Amino acid sequence: RCSRDWSSDVCSSDLKKIISKFKKSDLGLSHYDEIAEHVERHVGEIDNVFHEIVSDLVHIDILIIKPTEDEPNYKLVTSGMSDKPMNYPKDWEYEKKEYVELIFLLPGDWDIKNVHDEKCYWPIRLMKMIAKYPHIFNTFVESGHTIANENYPHFAESTEMSGALLFEPLNYNEEFKSLKTKDGKTINFLTIFPLYKEEMEYKLEHGFNALLDKMIENKVSFTLDEKRKKVI
Image 1: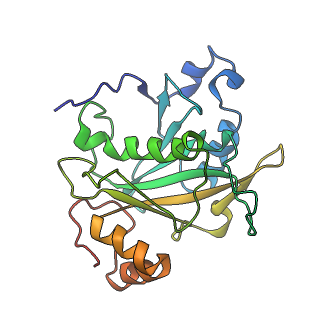
Image 2: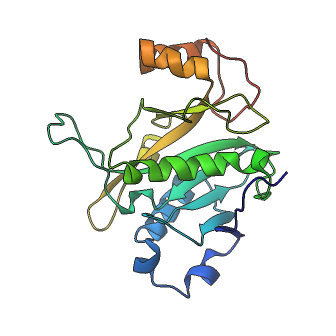
């Protein structure tokens, strides 16, 4: 089914053909080249890009690394969330990681190009929502934070998941976790991991480490499994 108009996105195997008509400052792509180079160095070759045609606040592209024999899953990475700093409280006493991009792992058989079917598109929609969330609400996100659909509606008919956990990438080398840009920014990368309502509530009551222990105990894969067993 096609529940929404996704005409603001286009799937392109050659982003340069699209962005050559625009100034990078207009599109908010100030660190696209550096992010893409960083991703290809530490994650894999970028095969495709979901390029955002219509943008609000920040311009979010989704870099797609296709499955390989050694890494049989899709890896999706945002570019653009870090173009604006997130807003921390004035009395924040810890390190401020103001610039963030996101990574999401999908199964190798995911119908990645089917942007007209919500059952296929919802992970990309979720990435865009989280990427714009701190800029819309003038706040910040960090490792250990959770974000939920209001009143916990499911992300799609194909899953009962309704929230997401953010944490530092655990299955990549240390160099991938942050990128120092030429203009002096430090961009940190966070993994998106979808959660069930019960897992969201458990994390809110017991904390991030307790939920992470449950995930490890249950040998949960960080690649999306819409029908995985709940860890709670």
